[in-house]
Amino acid sequence: MSAELTLLFLEKRVEASRLCASITEPFATGTEPAKPEVLAGDFQQVANALGDCLAELKTLNDGLEKDNSLEAGDIRHVRGRIGTAVGEVARAAQDFAAQIRFFEAMNPNDADKTKPALDKFEDVEKSTREFTIPEGPEEGAELAPADDTGLSPEHDDVDPMLM
Image 1 (cartoon, rainbow, N blue to C red):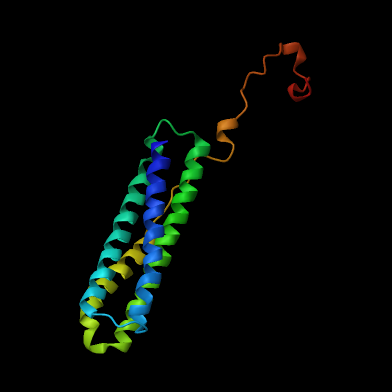
Image 2: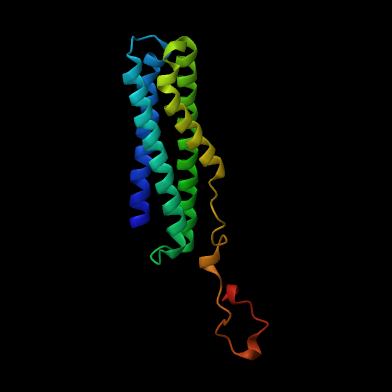
C-alpha cells in the first residue's frame, strides 16, 4: 500500500503543476500585466517541482521489485500509473516551455529572466523521454496453474477443468 500512497501524492503534485499552467498563462501571454521577475520565479518553482516529482517517480519505479507486499498484478498496475504520471510531467513541461517561449517572444528584453526556467523545463521533458519502465511480471503470472493436479496417474487423461 505504501507504493500506491506515495504514487497518489506524486500524481496530485503533478496535477497541481499542470493546473499552475492555467494560472500563469494569462501573465505569460500578456493578457494580464506581470512583473517578469515574479513570473520567472513562478516558472522556476514549478520547474523544480516537476523535476522533483520525476525523480521521485523514478525512485518509486526502481523500488517496486523490492517491495514484497506487492503482487505481480499490483506491480503492473502501479507501473501503468507511473507511466501515466510521467506522461503528465512531460505535458506540463511542454506547456510551460511553450508559455515561456511565447513570453520571451513578446518580451525580448526580459528573456534572460525566464531562460533558467525554460532550460529546466526542457531538461525535465528530455528526462521523461529517457524514463523507462522495466518489463514487469508477465500477465497472469500470479495465476499460474500448479504442476500437480492432485489426480492419480491412472486419471491423466481426465481434464481437471471439467471436474
